[in-house]
Image 1 (tube, rainbow, N blue to C red):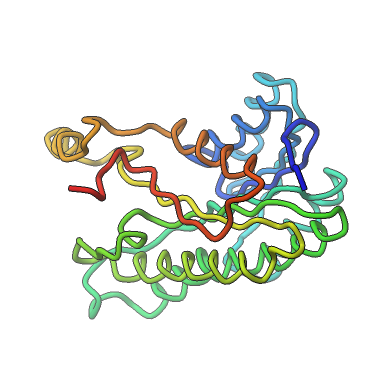
Image 2: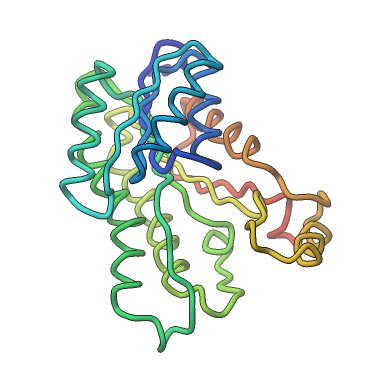
Length: 249
């Protein structure tokens, strides 16, 4: 199945700002009708209006808590109804708590698994039957360059790293199971894309210098990579690092 982009329907989670917003805008620029999801309704509506005004495309904001089964099922069902189907699912949502393993409360791990791995599973499970009815689709999940490289690297990232490693495994398993349905499943593993707003300027510069291309990528690089994985007709089960070569040093 050649998916193409123009006229297709896409769901993008975690899309009220940052990388998710950039993905939604890039898809809209390519003629895709997009439903976006996040927990904060006011910001989500603002983002939808901004993208719609810039691109002239339909952007449907649906507020939902994707840490819950009801939130995932409700978002996918509403989006499918309002867009008239689902061709593309981009699983980008999820936040993590950071800290020493023995100090993190159990809820931190529950939220990391629910918001990332289990949320991705639930959204995919709800979207797959809709994709099957129309002959195929694309699922793009969000992992991390460290998990893709098998390098925990930093202390205090256990819940994050475990959830992201699980997403890579999910991507591979779903790719195998869904290939016969012409649903291709891949993942993006971002590296230094956007510096956290509270990061020290010296550390921001140090990260740029440690990256072979010599800079932070910016969210547009992720949006371009997502578009490429949607347009492919023969790549599935891959986790693609978008890290400026960071994994090779």
